[in-house]
Amino acid sequence: MNKYQLAGIVQAPLISEKSTIAAEKNKQFVFKVQKQATKKQVKGAVEFMFNVEVASVRVLNVKGKQKRFGRSVGQRSDWKKAYVKLKSGHDIDFSAA
Image (cartoon, rainbow, N blue to C red; front, side, top):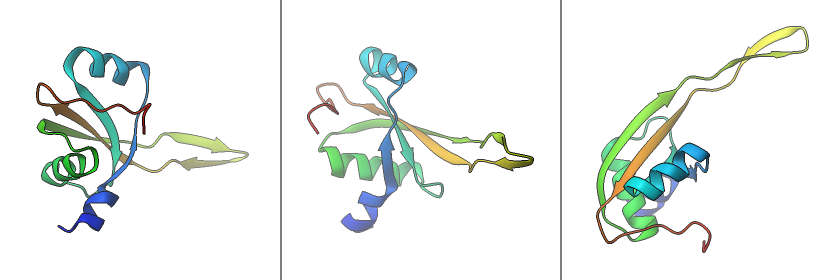
């Protein structure tokens, strides 16, 4: 894949209480990624964008919730989440970016 395609794989970092604890304890960072992205693509994108070495990647599909919009019932879109574990000696600092 070229650099332009790799840059589009990772959509946003997910900052929550759970992801902050995972980052502090295990050097594991959580990203929202494209729905069709594979583990290899996520690994390549994170290594390219943040200049770090990735040890492992776990991905999971998050189902969209059903919500009411007035009288009608709708559903939010499904999306994919990736847990990226970095090798020792590497770190991502989101506050500097």
